[in-house]
Image (cartoon, rainbow over all chains, first blue to last red; front, side, top):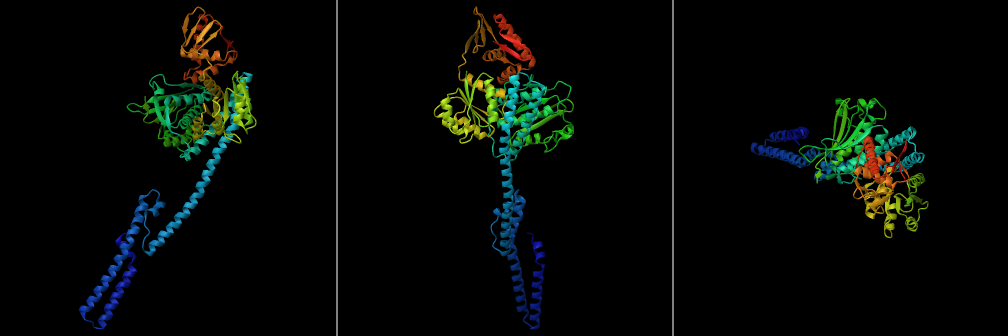
Length: 351
Length: 221
């Protein structure tokens, strides 16, 4: 609360006080009061006015100053009331009570949406578990048909591929819901890097193979020699989903008419205990201009526009999950040559 | 023949699981009423149970808990929920494995096979015609007692063929088994390994052990 502005605000009060003083002095002059007494009366009046202004100023200053300062300092300004003491003066009380009512009504309103979005998330999770039942039945049926008739025809391949696509989209929704409400369901444990690679290899082997792509696990040169001795604290399922998104991008953006490969491997970062979990391909690559934006929500980029089925959500969800796990996500690519998407696992435990 | 009991209330999945397991050399049984699951399991005395978590009347975790008081039969939990706490509870109650739907049928079979393998029953050494196969030392011994050492990959292939003898094994089945053992071969490498294995088998006097079935895979009688 600035004193200057306070005085300006009180200009009418001051004017009245000055007029009153002038009137009193005038009246006393008419009655020819002793000049000493006159000065005394005027002086006392001035002191009384100034004192009452100062009292009023300092009484309010404490409350308004901390209100203004705390609102500015807090990132959740709506909680400011919790930091203040209820003021002793009437105006302050009014403001205090009104703020309380406003907060409460806002909290109620936010509560309605919170409840709605929580119920929606729960419904979606339940729905996903339900929809996985017919999907399981379909993929089992297809597998059995292939096995019993002993022919793996293109028809089956197509049906299997489409079924897997549905599964992938369903999973994407599940992890989107989870990334938005992350407190709920994750489980951090110490996992061997080799196990993560193994999970990815086994889970996505059929998909990669049926797309006519060579799936290579591990790296010939460099890389980590013994990924089974490197442990990282993470959520295994989330990481598997992340690798799956990388692989599915590599499948989508492969070059046609060329021998494609997807390579999954772990690499060391020099001079640290960080390990890079990489998915590399020899596909279309990502234009430099797009590289910084591929993790944005709904960004499809120039590659995405070439084909349908790009939602721009996959890598966004990946980024959200990585942030929650405390991993870093990186992209390295040259247009027309290769793409390498990787997750940096910090502070691995090398045994 | 190993007996596997399927506890699954979703008919579409249950029927396909029965077909899958029966065509893979197991005896598959299933349940259609779910009021007294654990006593049904006990009275059927299976070699393994595939137990769904979401069951009517009583959920799979509670069934497992009840079952474990009376039996040590291996149990694989199967569920469409991949909630972490379900998995932790199931393992805590004594499940041997935990698989999330929709699962890859080949992987399900491998995991069933793994559990049986882990429980023993597969001896370290078997006699196949004139050949002795020592799985533990990764060695084959011919009629005269000459030993030939097999590489890890060759042994995995031979072991898979041996345990599926009488059935046609596709290249993909072999590949899946190798990958499952963290040997990530490609197609060419598989061909090389099979021909090397055949070479060693024929030196040991059983060159015809692994037949090729064109377009289908391999067969060990």
